[in-house]
Image (cartoon, rainbow, N blue to C red; front, side):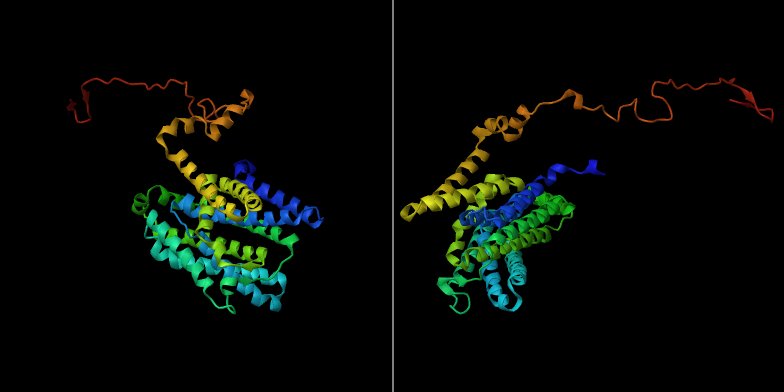
Length: 375
């Protein structure tokens, strides 16, 4: 039973679980600084955003630039729910209910936007989702102070910093489990077939519209959950933080990690978030604009590297898998014989036996009982 389990599929779970336990122990013992805890919160939020967007961009093959808009919906509506529910339910129940409300409403917006938008493809879908993100941001910006804070933003409850990033990492493991189990199921094969050839997928009877809406809704749900975590992490929600530059930043994480690679998205989200915090610390004033230019340059370089015909030979020769195979030592003793060899297959007749049939030659004329001769 255990031999049939592909353990490589569970490496990411093990790494995240071990990291969560170790960091939780360090946090409760007081060994982590406030700056480190804040960075861990941002890393957890970024991983959830990158993995959820990878479902749409990497596995479904659709270009979406409105992920920050769904996060904005979850941050505002989930944050408002936490403000109203915390005095009634308490800290932890209010957090759980707010996460569900923020994720569910973001998924609902994903379905509403997805019904007309997913009929489009390529640049047109990117423009529609980008417009959705800007519309959502503008709507919350122009609300009243009593409802969602207006331009000043919405103040959200504070949560224990020593525990919040642990909860965020646990939610990241849940997001990873949902994504990987979906992609490795028969529904995941249908989703990737839509990415490879939508016309062929329709011809084989796959309900393309249904699967697009399902992926879009699940991706939006986790973006909304990440938005609620963002509201708790920053104590306030301001619509200016969810502009199209943030959507581009999330897209860079997915592209840098590799299209359709969940583990790559996790690594890229961690590295880019760490780099983003460092750039925000060192680039102040007018130099802060260089951060957005840096992300744009990363995206341009990756697109050129992955698509330039002149670099095809270099990509095939120096990709990570081939470099890993060069350093990997093969042990000849570990090579097993083929269990399906002819001398091992149980048969009723040995393969080296010669089969023969005795033939009896009869006379050309055999009289029958009536005395007539048969020709």
